[in-house]
Amino acid sequence: MKTSKFSDSQILAILKQAEAGAPVPELCREHGMSSATFYKWRAKFGGMDASMMARLKELETENARLKKMYAEERLKAEILKEAIEKKLVKPSRRRELAQKAVREKSISVTLACAVFSISETCYRYQARLSDENAQIADWLLRLTTTHRSWGFGMCFYYLRNVKRFGWNHKRVLRIYRELELNLRIKPKKRLTREKPEPLAVPQMKNQCWSMDFMHDQLEDGRSFRLLNIIDDFNREGLAIEVDFSLPAERVVRVLNQVIEWRGKPKEIRSDNGPEYIGSVLKNWAESNGVTLKFIQPGNPQQNAYVERYNRTVRYEWLSQYLFASIAEVQDYATEWLWFYNNERPNKALGGIPPKYKDNLITQASTSSVH
Image 1 (cartoon, one colour):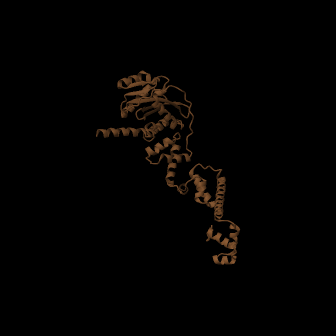
Image 2: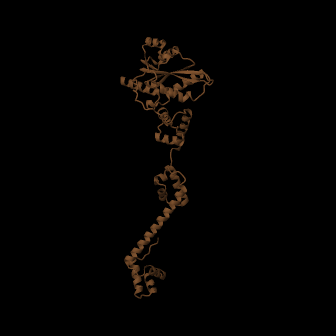
Image 3: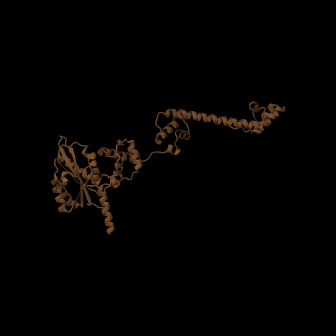
């Protein structure tokens, strides 16, 4: 607003001169002002002293400030009314609405940021690394399509520990959620029971193996069995044998094949199936110096390592496909076993594949020798 070149005291002095009888035209000519200005002053400040005049100006200033505040609040209400139907949770969404308000309502950036509760830094932020985000999204889509039972944790472990990408987990999780890849969390009904005694953790490979059978059906309805053998130390899958029948003699044959390239275990843990408690496996164990450890009947948690492995086999490939023949099942099992040992992250090992742990132990032992 344009300010007057006359101070409050000068205006009051001119008005007093006029009241004392000085002609208005002479006053106007003397002070260089128009007669309209004089009469405006007299209508506004006539009969006032200096304190009353100062108070009047303070009230005018306060009135102007309140009018401006009211106009801003009314404008804020109009802007928020237009955006009330939209979700304003994400800062990016609030930034878009603030920029739209600046363009369409011609309001200041400061006011727009105050309306949508964002900082001016957020308002001016420009997203970067969009090409890399597209790469992350592409990897996540490929992994969740290929491995339908994998959640965010398995995908992130694979990208970080196997593919060696250095992406931050919060960034990968944000893109994972934007793609709506979250798995549905199924509620579990757990019975209250005493805490079982934890399994002993082997300190070296071939200290203890675990084995167990699984059952499934071919496409034509015929049932077949799988024999799973793992090393408890690094959860490495040693063998998956598939056939319609797997008697004790087949179990012994598979164990001999694994021992040829892996070495002999000290112990083998299993349940009380007829193939395990029979004389065939017992005689083989005595001749090879291997101790057979049997769990208590009805307590599969005592063989938890291989039971957890069975769950992975079931949900990651066995229940995902229909197989037409035993040969087809065996080929897929062999292919998946290599992927499980060399590339699939294992949460029990800190997100690394079983072979990685074996290599880490080998490197540590070599460095200690030197």
